[in-house]
Length: 242
Figure 1 (tube, rainbow, N blue to C red):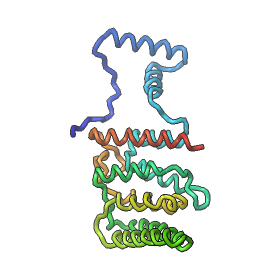
Figure 2: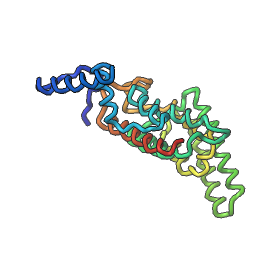
Figure 3: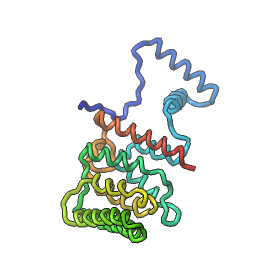
Figure 4: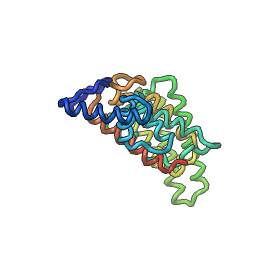
């Protein structure tokens, strides 16, 4: 798939002199009325044409996504933000669409977890906490549900073992476990601390040139579409945030 150069280019050019004069004239009149500059009017008009959410938190994540944080860092920042909830409860309870997005894009981009990093212990610790929550729920459940939950406990224990023995592991594999146990996982900030540590150790995000906080200047059409999708999810989620 083709790639597009999205490096900073702020100079406006026009194919027609008539169009240039029209834009300049309209901007100048509005700038005079608002006691501001022509460029400020054009910028405000452009930003106003985008569907930014009214909620300040949702808008913050969308702005950072485009300012240069990239998808990986934006996800990590959101997970960290949601982990800072009240008591042991996440800040916002409607975060599942973000996790589903991260899971789906990770499958498409083959995002992996670097199991050799020193911070992998944080991933394992928080995953163990979620597994223990599921185990507790199993002990208090009827037999049929108990057996299903105990099978999930076993999966969680196997994931912990893989994280400590493998060199690389699928990022989406761990997210699948969270999504499959969402009813329980969504009640604890351990889930989002897990997602913070997991995302921090992840590799191969295709909207970045390198595994750093810098977004790519040259970005694929697929990455552009993914970024737009993530912004739309934040907008929809923000409607439910007080």
